[in-house]
Structure formats: C-alpha cells, structure tokens
Length: 387
Image (cartoon, rainbow, N blue to C red):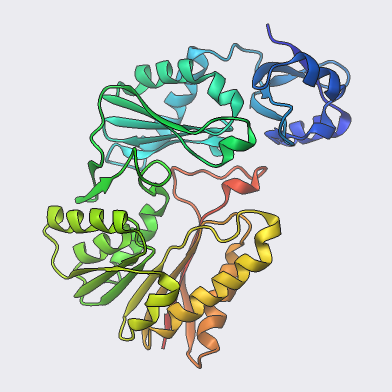
C-alpha cells in the first residue's frame, strides 16, 4: 500500500510512548529513504523487527522527518479524514453552542500539521507541512461532507511552511468570502479578517479568558493591550465596563475595532494606536489591564531575550494599576505557566504592591494538548489582583 520506513529501537520507543514526531536519527537507512521517497510521502511505519506500527508521512528535509497519523493499517483517504473530523466535531459540539470553534488542532487532535477553524458557514484550513499539503484535496472533500460549509479558505501563509519547502499563499477554494467576516460569539459581533488578518483571522484560543475578564469589568476602566480586533475589550464593554482603551500598533486592526464598536453599539470604547511598550504607561488610573502579546520566545535560542521582553512588559502593566487586576498572557510554548506567574507577580511586588494570583489558565477545550508534543501546550494566562 505505502512504502515501508523502518524505525530504530529509539524511534520505536518514541512511537510506542505516543510520540507523533520522529527525528532523522531514529530512521533506519535514512539516506536511502531520502533518496527514494518524495517529500511528504505517506509511509508504512515498521519496528526494527519489521512489525507494523502505523502510517505517517515523511519529509527528509526537516529534522522531525516523520509525522505519525495513525496506528491502524488503513488508507489515508477521504474516509479516514471524515471519521477523524466527525470525532473532532462531536467533542466541540459538547461545549460550544455557536458554530465557531477550532475543529482540528494539529497534534492535539492527532493530525500533525493541520489546523481547521470553523467560523459559522466558513471553514479556514491551514497546512503547515508537506505531508498535509499533499493531502489537501481529500481533506477539503472530507470537510465538505462533514460540515457542508458555504466557503472554504486555504490560509497557508504561516512561517512554518518555509521549513518544509512550501510556498505561502491564501486561496478561497469554495464559495465566496467577505473579508472581514462578521461572526457572533456570546451575543457579541466580531469582524474576522480571514484573508488579510493574522493566523486564521481570529484568536479562538482566548475565548474562556475573555469570558473570565468580563466578570471583572463592570464599572471598570479597562486596557486591552495588543488588542488586535478587540476580543477582550468587547467582552468588557458587553459586561458593563465604564471605559475600555484598545491599544495596538496596527491601524488595520484598530479600524476593525472601530467598526466592531459600531456594530455592537458599544459606548465607552476608545481606540489608541501605538506601541504597547511605549504607550501603556500613559494609562495611570486603570482598574483592569489585559496584556496579550505575540510570542516573544519562538525558539529555544530566543529564550533569554524573550524573558527580558516579558519582564519589561509586565513591569509596565503592573505599574498602571494601583488597585485592581492584571491579566498576563503568553502564547509561547517555551514559557511555562509557573514562569509567567512568577514574572507577573514579581513585577508587581518589586513596586511595593501586594499580589494575589486569582486565576490561571492554559488551554480551551477546542485546543486539546498532546502531552508528547510540548508545542501544543503553548497558551497560558495568569490574573493577579494588586492592592
């Protein structure tokens, strides 16, 4: 059915322990496989003794050259993806009343290299690997059977693709998409720039944190720093915040915030264009500051410099709250929840403030964690009360 790829003893151990990424040095006769197999080829995975282990895809151009798709001896075809997508959908339907969620979270859903976000009648697919890119036709067919969307978008502009030798592109492969797309979550309207925005257009992973922030927002002055299209701030206004400042350096994102304020008929929202590090200090009478920065630590080599940035950022964020709350976030898989908690707390303590950690959070239900792929455990948030 598929070419055979034999693992070393170490590779077999990683596989049997649940690993989905197998490195080059765990492939027996790697050089031969590299010469004979096209990047992204589906392969039958064998133990050193030639026993069947599973099916995956192989790209010799990257260090983790083998990604595991299944432990069953099956065809990786439309039927395979239909069954996987149905399983993912059943889990999401347990928790979300709106048809807005991440249907597939790559390794978290045992489909390495694949992201699928659902925005009501529009589905956005991201392919991060050559193996998934080769399977896009059957993936799209399976999505159409399971979800029957009005439109399907390939948002394949992620930086990871270059490592796999893939080009960057954005393409509507079914239907038409109005950009930005208006969706509704928790009776709040959001404008999602699917074609022109970051990632798939909206950060679904912060849904539970936004809901938590809303509980603390009534009659408060709130800062939504790195606001992008206004997720946290809109929840605060919906909950009765006195005033919300939306701070971001992107004029494009802030235009969408302004449109969203009008759509929701929110009053009390003020848009501020500027760099968070330079402009956050001007808000000296804040009751609640939400800080949701981009990942400052994208590689292990960037750890030290990234830590410095996080420390500087939360030093500023905790300085503008005399008595109130700061929600600190990180989307870097290289920064642990404990380290983030220590950074936020220490930043406040160094200014002579009392600190209580009242909330800590990792992942929403539609972003399941795979314990053998640490990168899936990327998001964390800590709320501290300062007094």
